[in-house]
Length: 316
Image 1 (cartoon, helix red, strand yellow):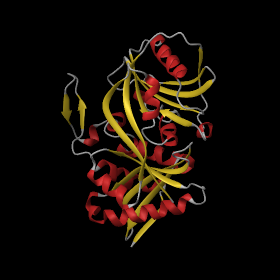
Image 2 (cartoon, rainbow, N blue to C red):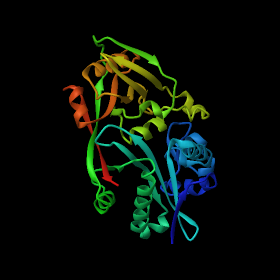
Image 3 (cartoon, rainbow, N blue to C red):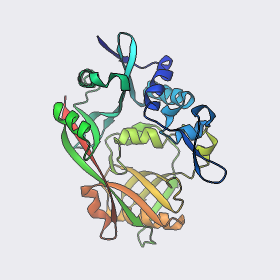
């Protein structure tokens, strides 16, 4: 018998263990700058984080799960005869079409000892999400998938998920521009600010999941995370308003990843503003995951780095 229920803080250790199953070798840089294999217990919380985010240690997992339970997301555990065998994380979002009012599957992980039950667990999950969608008036379940993923393609076909949007990642040089725009720091963190907004740049997960992951200063308790440069901005350009999270990738201090939410699709004036802002901040390039429609706004200078992500959905 499979039972699905909302996760509780008491499940933190069990869920973290599921995610840590994915890691076959724990590593860190030594004093000489070389990668070395180490025991998990010797790693700092930040070093564990670098292997896969908040679920890599009980301390950060508890913080993350607590935020989800307070409304950031919908965490679900799946049990067989009382044993925790799978975990799912969904995010309720309201965006313009093609996504609409939806639940987005941000995580779904199965205990490696129970992969023979994958089909049964997937079916139970989709049924549960359908039930959870109704009180939220969500009409669609969405999930992201990489190309050439046989297991992912089987899941999509089994449950009738159809492609809604393709995301490609581009690099574009920072550049001084002629447009008029205004940039201010933005402190408010409530996700309600982006209801019914587009996410034309950086939608590598749903707009809601990306917001909950990036914008709140959840991880400032970890010194290494607090010290990483990050920009939380409100930008207006030629009548378009946008909230932007921008951060250099690890080990690439002269590049900056852009995540942008706006009530309007991406415009050339907003791109001019972003490139000029990055230039003034002494970045050399912008990393821009965008939909195919938004890619046209980037112009001929943008270079695709080969990364492609598809967003799928099914009406419930």
